[in-house]
Length: 464
Image (cartoon, rainbow, N blue to C red):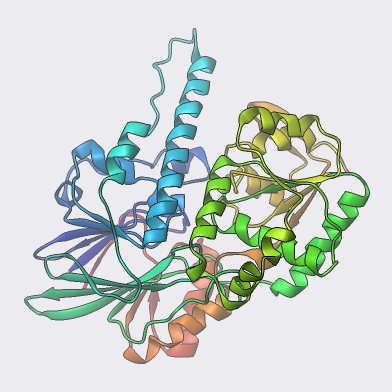
């Protein structure tokens, strides 16, 4: 058995994809998009030769674009096999891939307009809506904690990862001539005690573990403390009739933030004010969250069943259409607007930032990881001048990181999750993290569990 890392390795977070090869089958675990800098995004191609041309199956941990965004490329070499995922992941992935194809088409049109008359060849999008439609027919639902045979000699069991709706960690059992092995893919692990989602379920035994390390070097501040800090900043901004701009991830972070705002209104910690959900995909994703209450934690389920969740969000307006989005920019504060993309790499948030970053009464509230090279990362790092749509924009707004809202486990929770597997003495491979966090987590795993954790490079093959 061998596993080749086609992304989220070599110190990068995005582009998760693992090609598992045995003597009888080839299976791809995740097929994510690289996001952030142009250099990273230029790597968004799949090898045109080799085992990917002979895939038996694809299995997904969850729907986020950095885990699913290259799936439509499989149709370029006529892949017709199954793509296994939880039902909620299938539904959310459909939203995300349609949105991705649309945005790539718009970006290509914009670039071609800029290149007009320069003699450059027209830019083609990475994939089209037709590619997305073809790949969506290949999805096959799998249930939590139910072994599913996905290819000859390969069975997968999914458990709750606590990251977003439908997210899973995977236990892959591989049977070959020389015996049976268990390979665990953590996927993205959520923090314990997070709002809305259930806690991640650990595994008890493995021979080989691929563990994410996004925040392997730090602890998130407590949700209680950071929520209180964010509420105070929001209160100050609203009192100054300013605008709160939230670059948000359509799935997970948006719904958690709405849930926390509902709780703040209910407990009178904030007075209700206008909130705009300015993201067609986030609006649809919120509908999917309503559809799957069985995946909520107990507190969120009780709040939903009592009717308090919807009652306390009466000031939220859904802005699905472009004219509704443009109208927000002409409205005076105070208000809060949530719009994608979460790393400020595109989408409607770019227009809000362009319009209001130079206003000192504006608050930019970051609610998730910001990839190196992204506009969101530059804002989080304190840039005083940025470029948006090719134009310079001065940054006079305040920027605040809402760290307790992260969908990723911090070092303590990663070690706790790993602790249940440590007695089986698995080989540990650290992925999905920059080199600093990976190294810190590697050292702690060695100290606590006396296990050697490896930090592979991009396209490195792990043989077992």
